[in-house]
Image (cartoon, rainbow, N blue to C red):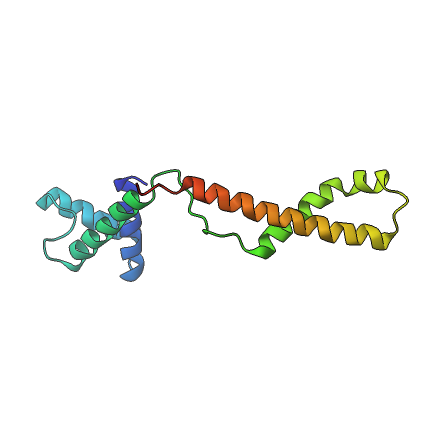
Length: 138
């Protein structure tokens, strides 16, 4: 997000807080800039809040570079299990056609073991991916 978008987001928020239409508030800020060379009056609450907003925006820009996505450090078991079950769904037809002599109970037992193993693999791969992304502190 560039500075103009950050300023617009701030001013839209201020319009909501002040219960004023955005276009009206923007026109006031534009007029203030035209007359005094600053969008917000020096020492005003708008200037103080904008400075705080700007500091937060700059800190976020440093902490999370553009294009990065924040993810949890560890994947939860139920999410890994859901992914494993989806993967099983792609293979179940082929598995059943190759193992026609298995009973429904045997297929279900195999599915449960397969999904558990696949979920463990997904979790270990996820952990390895996260560790590979972390900077080393040498």
